[in-house]
Each structure stands twice: as C-alpha cells, then as structure tokens.
Amino acid sequence: MDKKILDCESIESTYDSLEKITNISTEDIKTFLTEFDLDNYFDSLQATEKDWGDRLILRIFKSEFNPSLDYDSTCWFHGCRTYDSNKFELGILPLGGVIEEIWDFLFNLVDDKISREKWSNFRLKLETDLDNNFAHLYRLKIRDSFHYGPYAYLIRDVIFIPEKLSQHDYLNTPEIVEDICNCYKDCFDFDLLKEYQINTKRCIVKFKSDDSREENIGDALFYLYDVMNGIEISDRCCTACNNKGKKIPKKNVLKIEFVDKI
Image (cartoon, rainbow, N blue to C red; front, top):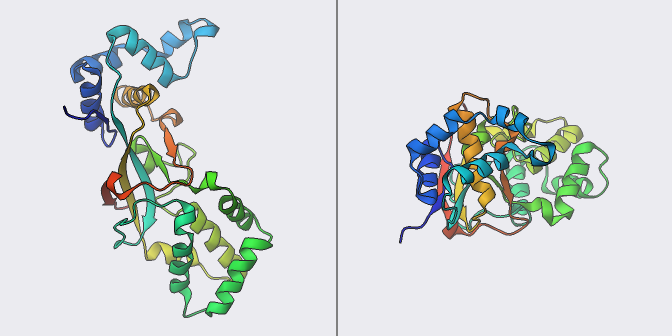
C-alpha cells in the first residue's frame, strides 16, 4: 500500500496529498474552499464556538465530508544558507552539532585579517562577557538545547515571505551566524555578514517526519483557502517544527534545493 504523505511543497502537491489522505477529490476540496466564507461563518458563531481559522476550517471540512484523516508522514521545509557543496551527509544537524563548523567556516573568511589566537579570544569573549544584544542572543541559543532546532516549516511558500509573517529570514542568514557576525563587526569594524552571504547560497532542505497530526491537515486547508480566495497568506500558515536538539537523519532528507533570490 502506498504511503500517505502530507506534502505542501506547492499548491498542486498540497491538493494531491490531501486527496490521497482524505479520499476527497481535489475538485470537491476546491469547491468547498471557494464556496465557504470563513469570515462570515466565524462571525455567526457563539463566543464559545469560535476558534483559530485553521482549526475552524478543519472542523467544517470534517463535518462536510467525514474524511479519512489517517496518514503516515509529513514533509517539512528547512530554510537555511550554506555553501553549495553541502550535501547534508550527516542529515540536518541541530545547532549543537554544527556550531564548531560554523565558527571554522567564518574564520576561513577572515583568516587573512585576524590570527587564530585573536579569533579564539573573540569567541571566548562573545561566549562569556561581551556586552551587546547579539552576544546575549548567542549565549541564549547556545545554553538551551530547546533553541538548537533544526527548525522547518510545513508550507514551503512561507519561507519566501518572512517579513510579511514576522518571521526570521532563514534563507538570508541563520540567526546564530547573524549574532556572531554582528558581534565581529562591533569588535573589529568589518562586515563579516556580507562576506558570509557572498560565500553561501540560499537553500531549502525537504525532509519527512512521522508527524501525522490532524492539525497539519487543518493548516494545509487554511493555506489553500487563502490561496483560492486571493487572501494574503497569514501567520496561521507558519506551522513549524522544532526538533529540539535532535538531528534529522540523512534517510529522511528528500531534497536539497538551492534557490535563487526572489
């Protein structure tokens, strides 16, 4: 039996995967999404019945079709910026597994400007008592594995519109790299961040997980509802996963895609 996988890589893949999971045709799903007025329905509800749009649309979809909601896995999209020879041979590593590589890579960008000893002293100061906001953010991320990720989004499209959704632009620069580079500029008056961006490319790594929660289907439907009705994608489409310090195994990686600036 074919595996049922929720895949929101594109509008078409979202419809296709929802059809296979729910046993409801794409045409019927489209009709439901275009004929259903979510705002008016929400306004008509009693206060105790109101819910977030993605949960509400799933509730109505279930009432309308009594669909199958059992599936095997979910695709996720990890936005990052990395060197173009990175094949993620070890999978997608959490922050604790890549921090040394990040420091080494950044040093190689400025090794003609700073000695290894001075670089090590800079790192020590950043990790202990450098007093600026980026240093504080760096230390916060490093000391708590909850912030180690890896992070990823359910819906690929949201990766490209971070400003509209009040999200960090992971394709532009990883947060930890931004912290280090801004501290370096503060200490040495050199734009290491620009150098990093010149030597790396925007990348999306698609992977699968065993996550098969009903809520993911609601999020996918809400995304399609926005698209079908010409509504700007909202922050309710920013469903994300945080692997909390555990790596994504190589066998779960489905695609590594370097993307041009949009």
